[in-house]
Length: 135
Image (tube, rainbow, N blue to C red; front, top):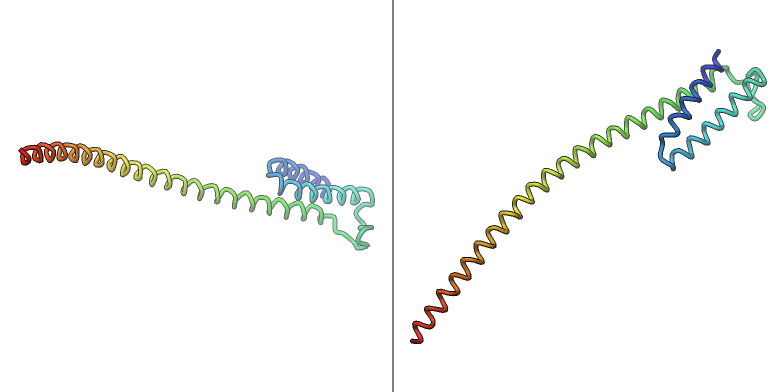
């Protein structure tokens, strides 16, 4: 029964691994293969001992490892979600700041246009005054 639970957890783990990004995915796929090999050994030998390490293993050890791995994955997903939310907040604030800056730029352009018109008008007046003074 515990081996069946461990196999079910391994299937869930493999499903989660498929959603990971490539650098993490390779690492977790390797880990899943190791766990799968241990489960097969446990089924073949009745999980009395681990011939590779030469020590006794408890029946729930693969299950514990899978549960711990699942918990780590859950923690990683929660951290990724937190970072995503933080990034969304930063993005929203940046959009607000950019909108304000756009307004400032638009007002500045309007002011520059008005100043240019005033300068053109002043230049024409100065030109006429200069002609009048020269006579």
